[in-house]
Amino acid sequence: MEFGKIALKIVIGFIGLWVLTRMLGKKEISQLTPFDFVSSVMLSDIVGETVYAEDIEYSQLIFALFLWGALSFIFEKVSQKVKRVRGLLDGKPSLIISNGEVDLEHMRKNGLDFDQLRMLLRQHEVFFISEVAYAIFEPNGTLSVMKKPEEEAIKRKDLGLEVFNKEAHLSYCLVENGVVDQTSLRMIDKNEAWLHQLLKKCGYDRLKDVVYAEWKEDEELYVVPQQRNRREK
Image (cartoon, rainbow, N blue to C red; front, side, top):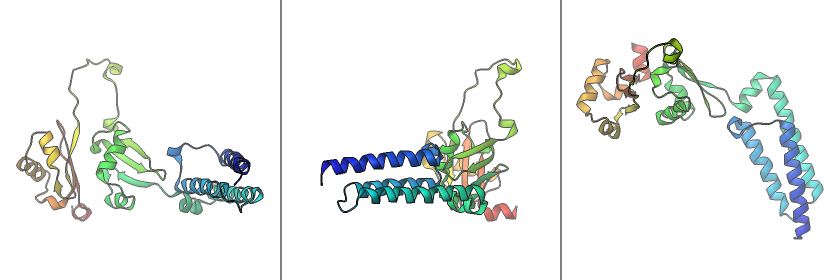
């Protein structure tokens, strides 16, 4: 295949992708919805497949770009006008934490585990799940967080109060899906007997009744029970 023909196809593809990107709007990678991501992958694949194919002419490449761009533009406009279509194309947000309680069903539906949830919360400077009133898992994979009113950050100097040199502490996952995290216990220099005692104080005699338990020094043990036990209480 002639180098000139390859170069011309690459130029056409580059300009086409640039025009379509401008036409469909600016979005950061972190803001891409599932439909945006699939559309981008398909569009780049169309260009990649046609660049080195000798039997595909320039006009066919331009037609493919035009057709894909038109379809994407139509679906984008339809999703803006029709709410039901928007949910199918872009996905719907999920309420992972509601009124301070973790919704395990929504976590499973979104393929989230507690390690991932804690990582997303840390990006919002939340290091203890019990500080959260509401957390919404967005269609683009980000987490929107609303802290409990009493956990909102207020600087002591703003209130004219004396600043104490109080040490900050991290939180530790001690139980997940009924299994004790031995590594976390060793890090805080505690044993299972101590953990069982804490769980009993919170009303849980069996590990299998606990989906998640998180501990932080100077704080009460935060426990997420099995959904069936929560409904019984």
